[in-house]
Image 1: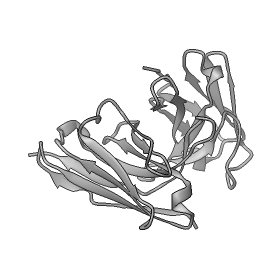
Image 2: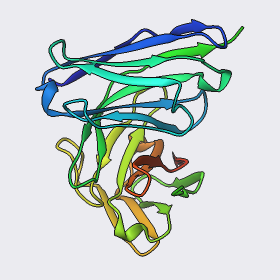
Image 3: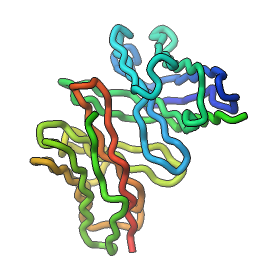
Length: 121
Length: 108
């Protein structure tokens, strides 16, 4: 079955860096767009970034642009999120999600279980 | 940037019909997707492209979209439907995904 497993979360000081990974299985990873979506504690969902199947098209939310970098390794069935210059407001559970791109009607299914990133001194 | 507005909460008795709205400027021209999130769990897609249901989602879940409002309708509500529900669109003008603020469904 389709499975997405995030890892790499943890406690980091403001200004620090962290790299999240998402291991995909149960589907042809290289055929699908992928995204990162986050959820601050007790808050709603916030889209973070999106990458096309080949990696040639990438978009970021304004809140992370210039600080976060999304990438993928199709040979390893893995998605990544390099997070630099972290701020307290980046504290959240980060989910990776398979992205269905159909005539720019993008939606997310399924989602991984999430990994918690805490930015605090 | 595009904004989606949802009511913070909706309450319904078991067996009744719940309607959760998602408002946005001319949202009827966009494709709307809905997610269910239970406490401590990842979101699950329940409706995509306004009114289509993924496999495994009960027929009780349906969606519609017109004008400035999209609606997720849950018929014959069960206790297990209690969750947060989020609407989402892709804003082509900014190439950003946008989520509504979420609606907490309470089954009385």
